[in-house]
Amino acid sequence: MPKNKTHSGAKKRFKVTGSGKILREKAGKRHNLEKKASKVTRRLTGTVEVAKSDVPRAKKMLGL
Image 1 (spheres, rainbow, N blue to C red):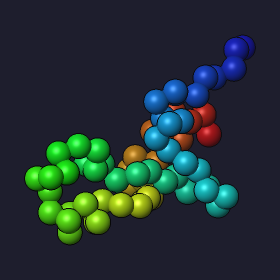
Image 2 (image 1 turned 90 degrees about the vertical axis):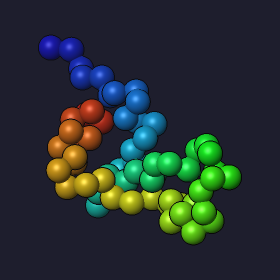
Image 3 (image 1 turned 180 degrees about the vertical axis):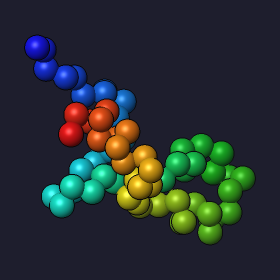
Image 4 (image 1 turned 180 degrees about the horizontal axis):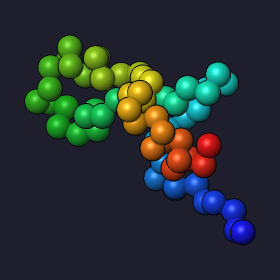
């Protein structure tokens, strides 16, 4: 049987920690930043854990 391929879009978007958690960047900080309040853009910085309901799908796409 052939090996499973990692979803190339998923490997660019998700990061797996040493303990096995899946991290993602927050959406909405790429464009139209002049319209958004500084408070909003600060809130959108950093990484967060993937929602519990989305973890199985993300793991499948990453080949975990």
